[in-house]
Amino acid sequence: MKKSAQGRQTVLETPMRETRKYWPLMTFYERFEQIVALSLTALISLIIIVALWRLASSIIVKLLFEISNPLDHAVFQSIFGMIMTLLIAMEFKHSIRPILERKAAIVQVRTIMLIAMLAVSRKFIILDIQTTSAWTVAALAVALVSIGVVYWLLRRESESSLP
Image (cartoon, rainbow, N blue to C red; front, side, top):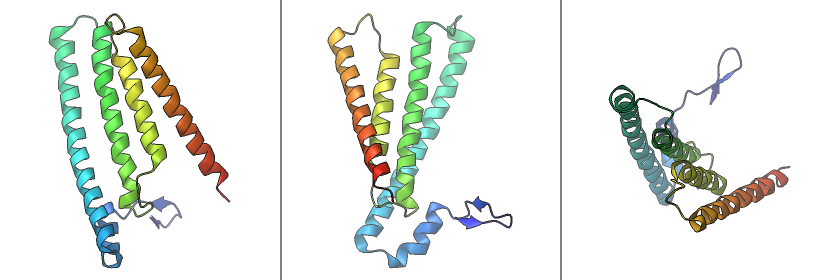
């Protein structure tokens, strides 16, 4: 990041510029990691674009031709399940960014726990309560609480290790 004339930080260097800047200084494995991170970012971006297009077209088709009530529970589940899937993909892509910006060497475990919480929350949103057993709901609830506790512990540990 560089500072503008007013002293505000602006993003002038993209991940590709960062990669080119530090490429001669990287070891073979660091270059490999950078290539993998760039490839994952490109692929996830493509997935997000296609998913967004399908979400938009699906909503338009449902609203114009298929449904009379957009607040119908099945429609709500379907649409918000797709939206949550997009949010999960965006958060996953965001977790790779520190590697590309050379701020972190690996994907942060806290971010993975956050993505896992989003995924389980998505499952709760799209769950059909009439056909799902109580044991499945209980298992998902235990999983969500467990992931939440791990996330809280990781966050607490990182806050306590700050100077």
